[in-house]
Length: 196
Image 1 (cartoon, helix red, strand yellow):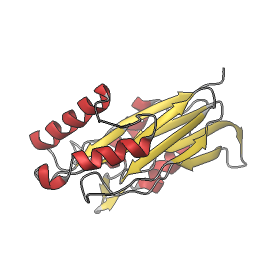
Image 2 (cartoon, helix red, strand yellow; image 1 turned 90 degrees about the vertical axis):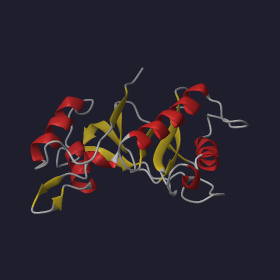
Image 3 (cartoon, helix red, strand yellow; image 1 turned 30 degrees about the horizontal axis):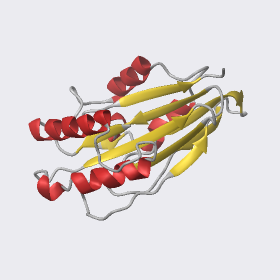
Image 4 (cartoon, helix red, strand yellow; image 1 turned 180 degrees about the vertical axis):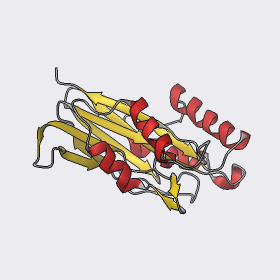
């Protein structure tokens, strides 16, 4: 999973730590932590923004079944992760498959009694999954132009072998940005699925 709390500072940090502790300890009553939609439903009931100093958060939560090579996931307003499958290449030299793992849902805390959808996808050998916050692509590149999600996805789509090195991705973001430091915080997680 990866989450991103609205705002900055101590309030956002405290909320993210509280969520992290609940998820790590798996202490949401009656929740099957292998069912991402149940996890998000329970988080939404626990962390309504009216009780969290008007803070809300986005989250993407997935569970991978190694035997079935299947990923189930749910999202609450979070950018869709990108799944790249390598090996066979099309005529442009990009991976044959670059898939957005979308699942609709409002951010956690926006509305009570919100129920989240669950989605699934099969994971091929030699794939890489990139999970990130919007800070990785909402970068000013000059003349008030933001780099954007599609440009970030295109950059990832030109990866070789088993995917980009994370340091290389971050360096590219810093290189194109006119902000120093970056305006928004960012998170980036890479999960590699290598054949057995």
